[in-house]
Every structure is written in structure tokens, then in C-alpha cells.
Image (cartoon, rainbow, N blue to C red):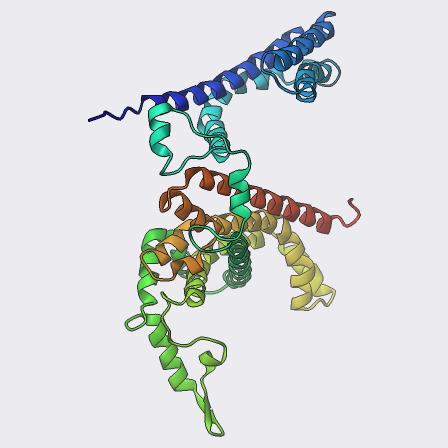
Amino acid sequence: MTTLSLLPAVLEVIRLLLIVAVAVAGLVGFLWANYKTWHSEYYLPGAALLALVVAAELHLVFEASLAISVVLGALPLLLAVLFKYAIRGRWMVPFLFAAPASVGVALLFLYPLVFEIYLSFHRLNLETLGDWIRTGAIDFTGFENFIEVLQVGSETKESFWIVTARTFAWTGINLVFHVFFGLVLALFLNQKIRGVGAYRTILMLPWAIPQLIAVLAWRGEFHSTFGYVNNLIRIVNDVFSFGVGEGRIAPLEWVGFRPQEWWTNPQALFASICIVNIWLGIPFMMMVSLSGLQSISKSYYEAASLDGASAWQRFRHITLPLLKPIMVPSMILGMIWTFNNVNVVYLMTAQRGGSEGADILVSDLYKQAFVYNRYSFSAAYAIVIFLILLVLTAVWMKSSRMTEDPGRN
């Protein structure tokens, strides 16, 4: 009977960890040396010599291409020019304070990212996991995992593009309802009404209740026979229905709501997940909007009232512009949270039929990693999701700045 040793795999992980630690420590030491020697007359010649040595070592020892060797070798010289003519010894004290912490930050955050990128270019799954544990080596596959992510079809039998479209729909629907109802409730709470503290406490309950408890409670309400949702739909349709000719019109059925099997119908399951997440997310936007409303000086509204502005004009030309600096960052946060909210989707679809028809990107990623054990594929999948979020955030921030200053290019 052979004994399976974890030592090769552990050594491989430690090796990568040491590479990251040495790289960060080397960078910190290199920057400190630049701070100490930038004013020397031999500084730039020494940097040029170092650049030449690095380029030659990359090309001759590590057999890198000439173009890559020249580009990477030129980095020390470019950094030296930056220190000599731009930085000129400034910000040395903040750098020295931040340098020790940067090593710890790198181990906590940079190393998982590097290991994720490392996995995405290799083949690690349930079949190759044993070989990796025994030998510490896995096959290099290049961009094969990224290409497979973008291809039609996967272990979940759903196209990446269909799941992406559903994720955008999920994010957009939730964000619109969060902002709209959050702002409406904030406007209500900003009025001088009796018992406003009690109203605020009640409306904050969805945010205060642990998400696990809230989602599990909601999941029971979507039971086809005993759930509150189907029974409420039946009651409303029975009480408020009316006849037209030989037919019968029920108000909720007219807009698409009818008693149904929420867990086995992918479209109904997706709608139920959206309902739960909307209920959970409204209090956050409500409190952000309320804090913004309370920071607006009453003098603006008094001056506008004296000028004869209506309530809608005051809201459009005073409230909305002054709320924008607060709402835009919170909407970006809400977009990222909703885009990555795997908890609600997983808890609502766990052990339910048809759940894969309601997956979003992060829940599909979770299944690829921990249900189908496709570790390298899921690493590439995670990087693709990160790039999508990065582009979305950059576009949103750019568009918000252009809206704030139309003359800006």
C-alpha cells in the first residue's frame, strides 16, 4: 500500500509564496536604495549598468526573448530617471512607514492573486490533483482555460454568455429597485412625522437580520403549496378579479404573477431570487440617501420656494444634484456587491431542481470550483469576472464624471 505524501504540493505552494515575498521585499529594498542614492553623480550611470545586467541575464540565462529582455531590463533605468527628476527624494517618510506593512499585505492579498493567476494557466482538476500532490507539478496550458470559459457550454450545461446576460439583468434589476425604493423611503423618513424612529428601525430590519436567516425564511415563503407568496397571489386574484365578457381578469395574473412552482421553473426561481435580494438591499440605499438628504441645507429649499419653484422642481434641481456625490459611490458599491452576491443565489437554489437555470456568474463559478472540482478553470473564470467588474466600474466612474462636468474630455 503506497502512502500519499502532501509534501511536494506543500513545497510548491511554499515556493510560490517565497517568490512573492522575495519579490516584494526586493522591490521595497530597491526603492529604499533609490531614495538613498538619487542625488549621487553616479546614480544614473549605475542604474544604466543595472539595466544592462538585468537585460543580459534575462536573455542569456533565462532565455527570454530579446524584446522582453530589453523592456524588463529598462525598468530600473526608467525608475531611476523618475526618482532623479520627478520624485527627488520626496515622500521618503511615508514610504518607510508603509514598507514593513507592504510585505504582510502582499502575503495576504497579493499571494492569493498570484496563485490564482498561476492556476489559471495550468491544468488542475480532480483528475490531476493526485499527480500535483505527489509530484508538485501540473501541466502548463497557456490560455486554454480562458478560451474554454468563453466557449459555449460547460459542466453546468449553460453558455457563459447566457449566464453573463442573466448576471447583468440581475444586477440592473436589483440596483434600480434598491435606488428607487431606497430614495422614496428616505424622502419619507426625512419628513417631520411622528414615530420616525420606529419607522426607521422597522425599515432597517432586512439589513440587520443575518442574511442566512432572512434568505432561508424567504425560501420557505416560496413553497408552492404552503408558502405565503402563492397564497397571497391567490387571495389578491380572487378578491380583486373581475369579469370581462366571458373571461376573467385577475390583477396579478395580468402582470405575470400567478401561483406556480417557484423552485423548478428557472424563470420563476430567478424572479424569486431578485425579490429576496431587493428586499435585503433597500435599507442600505435608504440610509445612504437619508444621510445625504439630511446634509442638504434647508436654505436651498427656502430660497427655491420664495422663487416659486414647485416640489418637483426643488427635487430635480436641488435634491438630485446634491445627492449625486453620495449616491454615485454607493451605487458603484451596490453594483459590485450585487454582481458578486453568491449567498442569496446559492441559498435560494441549494438542493432545488432547475437551479442552474437561475445561476449568475459567481454562483456558476462556485459550482465549477466546488461541485465539479475544476480548479484551474474556475481560476480563469474568476479572472474573467474580475475584468468584467473592472471595466464596468471604470465606465461607470468615467460616465459619472462626464455627467458632472460635460466639458471634460
